[in-house]
Image 1 (cartoon, rainbow, N blue to C red):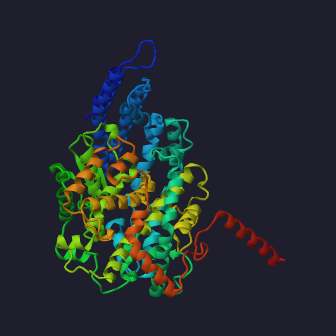
Image 2: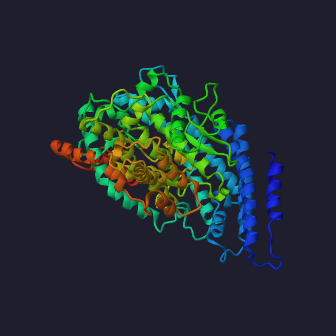
Image 3: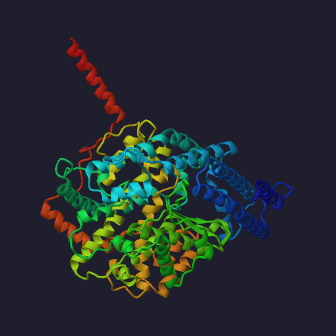
Length: 640
């Protein structure tokens, strides 16, 4: 649609809004309800065109497409501001609960609250950072053609997963940070200033942008809540960390691994050390037992990306959930284009707000990890399908963590040996204790390992927004948090010339990350509830497969249909019977592994935890100043 027609919609929103000519607030609830319907109908149109412009740019990165995306974003921002203004003309205090809730969602509009000039600058900076990240390539791989360059997906991702060469892994790790992280430091500093300005433009009560983001979780103190949850889980993480560190010590030697210190960040099979399942071959408790990593099997059977998505679709449909429309299969980008286009490969699911167009953008690789990612993204699409008939303001997860948890909770069933055998990806199921422990280890390297990383991403950002972390110590504080919570450290010097937080897509795209931490807690609550509904309450939680359970599917659908129409504790209660986030189901899932780790670490006499100063290669500005002063004094003494 032409921009002029979109502007006409905004004009209609203004002209059609009822108002009191005496300048008093409107108290007629029927008028309010009619206003909400009009806003929702018009929002579908404006949001559709904004999402479409974003899609075109993300699947074909060009200057022209970027400009069109920024224009569409500006139109959407103007629409949101006008809707917000008109909503403020109503006195909602006497309206019913649902009407009040819809109005409240109209009043907080994120970056759209900025002035037109600031909004354009905000969007342009984010677009620039995303472009830097998505087009970054690392060249000069040791032992290869020096002019050959590698993108993150699938090239660098495969190297980190498959190589066991210490120096090659370090080249890969450091090169990505040089190309994707370092160039965006100044842009990010500008972004933070505008983000904090946006928070105040929404409501003066917000201290900063982090305060604004936490508000959406509707709890008194989100940071305290997530730290409380992590405190429940930290002992398990430290047990796993000590065990993995010992195995890496055995493989790489004492000149590379300190058995009492942090683990070198580049040795864990993942660019961000957020999941360690790619090094399962080095840390598997009982080698030789059947493995649930079906990567080789997928490739042997000639699986395509489309077939992997069909497997996921079948799982949802067999639960009695909604099938994706034909347009999903025609319009999604599920493989990296081979026509030379630059694209944003980071996997994402898209709702076009017209109740019929839903897509996924993913550069799918034929691996077990990609199969799980497929289910994760298809979970988002299923959520879209279930709440599509809600008003636009309610089309979202009960909280952001709910949206991330849906696909993951089904992947907990899909990744069981029983299910993988059912769909022909596993010939032999190990049904003994050793096979069980191998499976739980593979799951822990994904689920438990992720928790501290999922926490520190936003702990760092919240402190940046609050001014507790400044551009002068961005990187030092980043590594301070990573070492404190994850027990990892860089193996090469890092300084404030680097900007390692931006080596992660979500920093550049301004995607809040605490949602993933929350999802890794609540997905196990969902899993436990669904297993009981599926009649598998007596099955160990880690072997439960809810496949084809219509009862579980119906209960899940009931929760998903709510979208954001109810506070998240009500949505949680509808499925689990609880109104709180609780880490106990996660602990129950991994209990056999916890017991085994206690015994194994005891045999080796391993220390739980790490000396945060051991092996650290970060340079702190204050330390550098002190060192320079010492050298200066020594120089004077020698000269004398």
